[in-house]
Image (tube, rainbow, N blue to C red):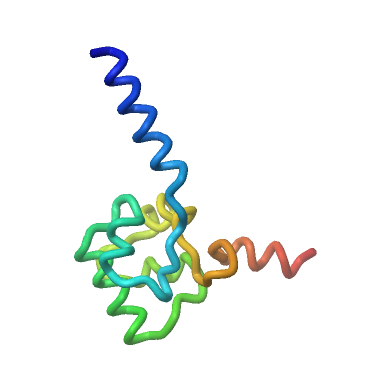
Length: 101
C-alpha cells in the first residue's frame, strides 16, 4: 500500500511539473479552468468575458480587474499564465526592470 501511495504521489507531482502555462489571451474558458490551479469554470468565463469586452491582457496584473480575481490570486497563478504564445507572462515589475537596464 505504501508503494502505491508513493507511486501515485510521484505521478501527481510529475503531472504538475509538466503542465504548461496557458495563454489567457487566446484560451477558452474550459482550457483556462483546467490549466490554472485555483481558477474554476466561473472565473475562467469571467476572464474570457473581460478579454472580449476590454481587449487582450497586456500585463498579468490586469487579471485583478476581472470580477472574482484579486491580487493574491494573481500572485499565486502568475507563473501559469502567458500573454502571448511566444514567451512568458509580462508583469509591470518586469517591464520596469527591462526599461531601466
